[in-house]
Length: 147
Image 1 (tube, rainbow, N blue to C red):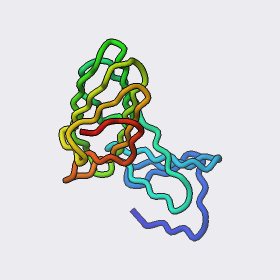
Image 2 (cartoon, rainbow, N blue to C red; image 1 turned 45 degrees about the vertical axis):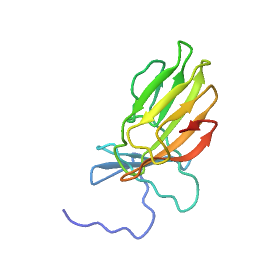
Image 3 (spheres, helix red, strand yellow; image 1 turned 60 degrees about the horizontal axis):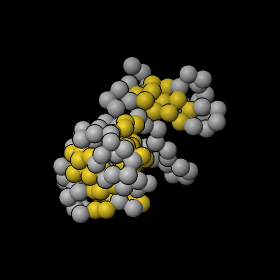
Image 4 (tube, one colour; image 1 turned 90 degrees about the vertical axis):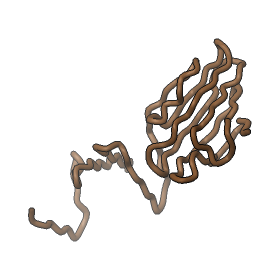
């Protein structure tokens, strides 16, 4: 395939596909990058990078789904004990939020840099980063107890 060089802005209403990855910038200035393997690396020199991710809810002792970036806990039916597997790619982000119920949600990450467990009660939230070699690392914490 021949190389194409551009010297100025290139406009497309349907986006671009580069090496199998789709890139689309909307008229509002938002940029969407869709990846066939599920991994997208973003870098913004100026502005804000927002993450739109799937979410899951837990109300029992099931494992935390690390394929989603946002997990809520409902302990109305009783306290939960939830294992959290290792992340899948360095830089992966997870948000855990206790949204309903008056019981504890105790999360035990397989590899946790800051301790061994995270205990969330109603209103608590924690922001985690997966760092290969170190495990899940706390980036932000609002009320969760770490042991």
